Structures are given as structure tokens and as C-alpha cells.
Image (cartoon, rainbow, N blue to C red; front, side, top):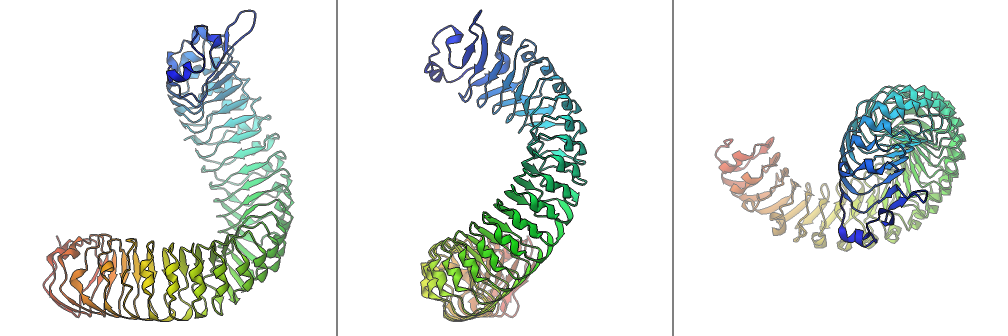
Length: 628
């Protein structure tokens, strides 16, 4: 085995007596013999099989983790090391199978082979090592079943088998490991149910079973694990209800049950877990009301209940959770108002209540949430005006109030929210003018105020929004010219102006940054020629300019390799189609009817093998299209 020679010499290893070397420990009497090799993180490389373990019979510890050791575990490793207590080879490049001869390491207390490339089954013989206290085989490529013999390791406190390819059922015998404190079987292919014998693991503090294919009900016996602090069963196929017995897990700090098939009501007893900090039940089929007892969970920092079928009113008691940072109740059937007690969530960073049936007004008390960065109340039935108090949210980065029944003008006080990156106010009843103050939001990346009742012109100051990637102003009553400053937005990818009364030319520098993918400005009063910057915009994917008064030669268009959809019907384009249209290999739809096009249809258009709709009607084109 070798390493960087300079590194070894630099640690004073020039002598021939091994007991003087760095990382080598020897007994002090009666005869000095090597008892420990501890050389972690030295980029050692080579093969374990090259070591003469027969000459190292006195070894009690091998610590070679975080190196570059390759090859397989040699069977000879086990036989000559009767005193070995610690074998720590994690974070190397070992491959092959764990040899059955490992059973000869009868003194072994700690075994860590994690983060290697080991494959094959876990040997049944591992269960013969009765002195084992810690086993970590995480992050390998181990296959097959978990040996039932591991249930004989009664001194075991830590068992980590996660991030492998283990399959089959979880042995009931693991429930006999009464000294076990941490058990991780996460991210394997384990099936069947969670053994009810796990209720006997009275010293267990952490149980990780997530990322498998476990089915059946959660055994109520897990409620007997009064020492448990972390229970992670997410991303399985568990069904049935959450056991009431979980109310006995008084030391629990983390409960993750998300992405299963759990149903029924959430037991009110969960509100008795006063040490709980993280509760995630999202992506299940849970129903009924959210228990008011959750207001007792004052240590809670995250509460995720989204994508269930919760109904009823939002409990005012949730407003008592002063340490809560993330609240996500989205995509349920919650109704009623957002209670003003939510203004007491002083630690809140993200509030997600979207896609429910919430009504009444946005409470002004939300303006007290000085740490709030993300407020998403879209897809509800909220009404009234946006309260001025929201302008106090100096840390707000994302605001989504879209798809409600909000009225009034868009407040100008949002100009003080300099950290805003996203503002979605679409699909409401907002009226009045677009406030100039939006132009002060220098970090804004996405603005959507489409499908409202806004009037007036688009402010020139929007040209200050240099980070803007998405600007959606469709289906309002905007008029005047689109300001040329919009064309100077170098990061703009999506511009939607359709369904307004915008007139004049398109901005002359549109797509100046070369990122514009989606341009829709149909059903306006646009005229003049297409800007040359747009004609040469190779990033375009979707263009909708139909039903305007746009003029100019059509022959300039066609060099758009990413174009999927173009609709320019009912304009005043003229000239001939260019052969370059045949290069638009991704084109699915092309509509340019009702213009003044002449000449022959280029044969190259026969190369458009993906196209599903081609409309060249009501022009003066000649010829046929032959598929190539």
C-alpha cells in the first residue's frame, strides 16, 4: 500500500521501527507490538490484500477511512486477527463481496464499511459476532435479504444498512435488539410491512425506514418507543391511519410520514408531542380537520401538511407556534378565513396556503411577520384589497396572490420590497394603473399581472428590472406602445402582452440578450415591421403574434432551430417563404394564413417531420409539400 511519499516523510516516518511512525500505536509492555493502525484521510491507495496480516496478529484497531484503498476485502483479513476490535474502512473504493470469513473476527466491536462499492449479500455469518456494538454498511451496492441472524447481535446499539439495494422483508428478529439506539434501513428495495416486534426496541432513538416499498399499516406498537427522537417512514406505500399511540412518543423531535398512502384523520394526540420540531405528513390521503391541539407544539419549526384532503377551518391555535419557520397547508380543501392570530408566527419564513378554498380577506396582521420571505395564497377565494401592512415585509422575496377575487389597485408600497424576486397577482380583479414603483424592484425576476382589469400604459421604468426573466401582462386593458426599454432586458425569456390594446411597433431591441423563448402579443393593435433583433433570435420556441397589423417581408423569418410553435395569422406580412423554414426541425405548429404571402412553397418544408398543424390558407402561395 502506498501514499504520497512526501506526505509520509513529512510526518517523521524515516525510521525503520514501526512503533515510531505516525498513525502506528504499539503496546508498552511487556513487548512492544503493533496494536493500532490509524491513518485516516491521507489519500492512501493500494490493495488491502498486499498487507501481511499474519504479521499483525496483535492488532486491535484498523482506522483507514477516507482514503483511496481499492480491491476486495481479503478473506485472510479475518483469520489472523483474533484481537481486532475496530475495523473502520469507510469512504474508500473497496469492491467485491464481504467475505463470510469475517465471522472469525470474534472480538470485533465496531465495523464500518460504509461509502464503498461493496456488492453481493450481507453474509449470514456476520450474526456470529456477538460482541458487535456498531455496524455501518451504508452507501454500497449490497443486495439480497437482510440476514435474520443479525437479530442475535444483542449488544448492537447502531445498525446502518441504508443506501443499498437490499430487498425482501425486514426480519422480525431485528426487534430483539433491545440495546439498539439507531436503526437505518433507508433507501433500499425492502417490501412487506414494518415488524410489530419493533415495539420492543425500547432504547431506540432514531428509526430511518424511508425510501423503500414498505406497505401495510404502521404498527401501533411503535408508540411504545418512548426514547424515540426521530421517526422517518416517508416515501413508502404505507396505508391506514396514523396510530393514536404516537401520542406517547414524548421525546420525538422529528416525525416524517410524507409520500405514503395514509388515510383517515390525524390523531389529536400528536398535539401532545411537546418536543416535536419537524412534522411532515404531506402527499398522503389524510382527511378531516387539522387538530387544534397542534397549537401546543410550540417547539415546531416546520409543519408540512400539503397535498392531502384536509377540510374545515384553519385552527386559530396554529398562530401560537412562535418558533414555526415553514408552514405548508397547500392543496387541501381548507375553508374559511386566514385567522388574524397568524400574525403571531413571528419566526415564519414561508407560508404556503395555496390551492384551498380560503375566503374573506388577507389579514393585515400578516404584516407583522418580519422574517417572511415567501407568501403564497394563490388559488383560493380571497377577496378585498391587498392590505397596506404587507408593504412592511422587508424580507419578502416571493409573493403569490394569483387566482383569487382580490380587487382594487396594485399597491405602490411594494416598491419598498427591494428583495422581491417573484410577484404573481394574475387572475384577480385588480384595476387601475401599473404602479411606477414596481420599477424599483431591482431584484425582480418574474412578474405576472395577467388576466386582471388593468388600464394605462406599460411604465418605461420597467426597463430598470434588469434581472427580469418573465413578464406577463396578458388580458388586461393596457394601451399605448410597448416601451422600447423592455427590449433591453438582457435576461428576458418570456414576454406575454396578448389580449390588450397595445399599439405601435414591437420594441426594436427585443431579444437583445439572446434568451427570449416565448413571445405572445396576439390580439393587439401592433403595426410596423418585426424588429431585426427578433428575426435573428435563435432562442425562440413559441411566437404568437396573430391578429395584429404587423408588416414586413416574411422571407426574413425561419432561422429558428428551437422553434416549436409560431402563429402569425391575420397580419400584413408579404413576400415569399424562405427555404430556411426547413431547418426548424422541432416545429409542431405553423400558422401564417390571412397575410399577403406569394410565391412557391419551399420544398425544404417537407423536412418538417414533427409538424402537426400547418396553415398557409388565404394567401397566394403555390406548390405542394412533399415529405422527405
